Length: 73
Image (tube, rainbow, N blue to C red):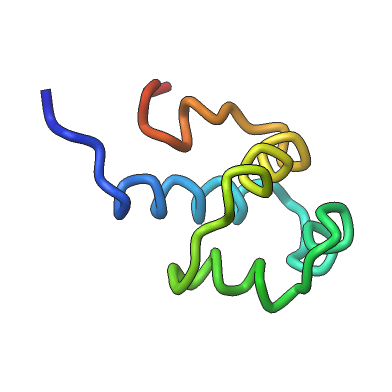
């Protein structure tokens, strides 16, 4: 079994944000963060804090296990 890496998680997070159909501004508004922060998640320069990640999964209606590479669909 291959270990899960931060790059793998980052890729899935970026993919999930892009496929959500929501704008960076809308995601930021719903999370109470800056749009620039969402842009950093998309560029791979930053990763959300655990609480932000949990709320981001709710906003995106995403399975955290998928983003964390625990599940494959």
